[in-house]
Length: 44
Image (cartoon, rainbow, N blue to C red; front, side):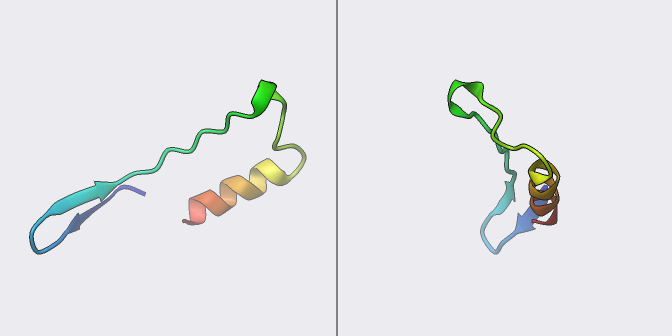
């Protein structure tokens, strides 16, 4: 996910940080959903 991109006039690096903060800390991702979401994010 950390790629250094060289352009004609600049160099930049893009990184992502995802934070899940449900209201009142209730479990939102339950069952098989956490594994599915993790796989989808890793494919990006």
